[in-house]
Image (tube, rainbow, N blue to C red; front, top):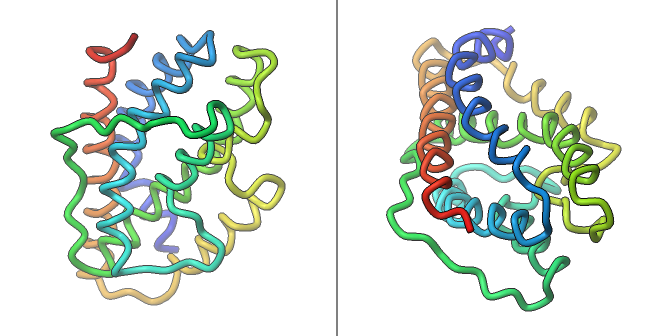
Length: 187
C-alpha cells in the first residue's frame, strides 16, 4: 500500500521534526507559554493553508491556522495574533504535493491526541476548548485517519507517488526549520 511506502519514505524527516518539537512542548508550564507557541505556529500554518486552498478540499477539515486561531480565542478572546516574518512553507503546485502536505497535517492529529493529554497535565486547569489544533476530530480521529489513508491508497503513478512523498518531506523539513527558530523568540 502506498500509505506504508509514504510512511517509510518520510520516517527520517518525521523523526527529525519530533526531535525539534517535543522539547518545546515539554517546556510549556503556563498558559502564556502555550499561547506563544500557538501564535508562532499560526504564522507557519496560515501560509501553508493558503498554499493548500486551491488544491484539495476534505469534507469537515478545518484549516490548521483557523483551529489555532480558535484555540487562541478560547484562551484569550480577541487575542491579537502577531504574524512572524520570514516563514518558508512548501510550494504546493500540484494536487499530489498537496496530498503529501495533508499527509503530514492529518497524520499529526494522531500524535495530537497525545500532545493534548500531555499539555493538559502540564497546564492543569485550562479551557478544554483550547486544543482544537492538536485534537480537531476528538473521538473520530482514528476514523478520520483511516478515511484519509484510504484516499492515499488510491491508484497513483510512480511520478505522482514521488510528488506526494516530496510534498510530505518538504512539509516536515520546513516545519522543522520553523520550529528550530522558535527558541530564539520564546518569552
